[in-house]
Amino acid sequence: MAPFKLIIFCLLFPWISQLQAQKHPVFYGGFEGYRHTSFEDNSFGAFSVGAQLYQLKFFAPEIGFDYGGSRLQERSVFDESVFVDHLSEGVLRQRFTFSVLTLNPKLKFGEEDAYLTFSPKYHIGRLNGEAAYFEYSDNNRYISLKEAQESKIDTSFWSFAIGFEGFQISAKYWFGISLHYTLVNANDVWDTMEFSVKDAYIRSVSTSTIGLGLRFYYNPFGSEND
Image (cartoon, rainbow, N blue to C red; front, side, top):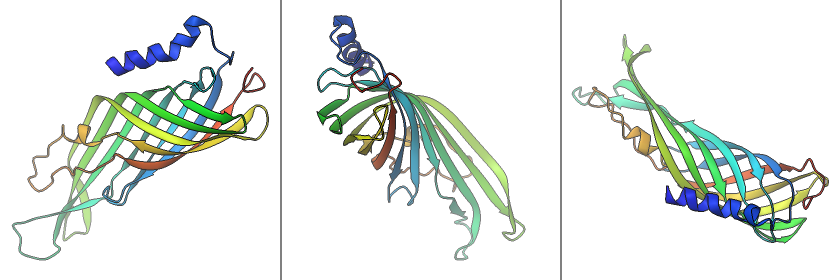
């Protein structure tokens, strides 16, 4: 919990010292999309909402909430005791989601219409995982649920982003784009599951990867420095 307490202190210190230049929060909403070739060519995404609390020179910390996740491609399970090529015994489906509080001591460099941003975000919350094994019946004509697993664990991880912010629509609206690298690890929750069917092992995949993000900012108080 040390990183959590340290970031909270960094976010609140300018408030305590009453040095903030931006007097009111600026709100945001956005989406991040990720794709990893070792992740069965799947993709996953996250929705985010929150607020930039203030801006003091180049320091513009944010606090928010992210919800994301994805489903892996369906994977065939083969019966190794049957010596027939491509005879599938069943299929395995895996899914994960995360819901996390985000603390972001964001740095902004430049002018109001073209900021370069760097965001080392700390995430803390819950990681949920689901896995289900479906077996084929009647010569592969349909499948039925054989066994299912679900698990929820506490999680914390970092992500990092660099991008541009300040493409203004008006004095109250602007947006930003960024390149992200997330360290979320879905294996942490899948590793808590195990099927009784010996061939239906949980697939471990890399979910730490690079993605793109888009955000819209809204300042209900007027200008960015209001």
